[in-house]
Image 1 (tube, rainbow, N blue to C red):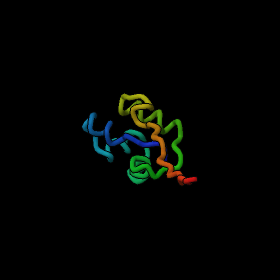
Image 2: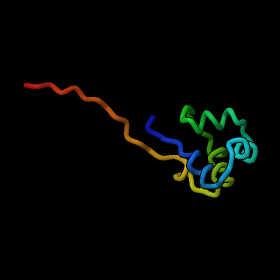
Image 3: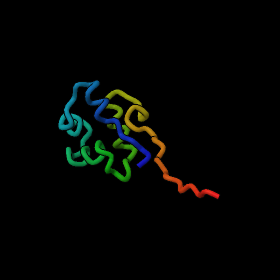
Amino acid sequence: MPIAVDIDVMLAKRKMSVGELADRVGITPANLAVLKNGRAKAVRFTTLAALCEVLECQPGDLLRWEAEDVAHDVVEA
């Protein structure tokens, strides 16, 4: 997926556990793990806002775009 999630980085910077973040944001640790591990298909803006508030960061500190590697077939003439 071209969107990478950097929650681990912010957790380390804030010296906070996944369980503490989940409690403070109001989501289950399992749902936070799905988001944190990049398996989420979507994130609600309210959840993103809560993550930013608790972690004292901007959305761009948690999410970033990465270009996908696309293999192209080379046809020789």
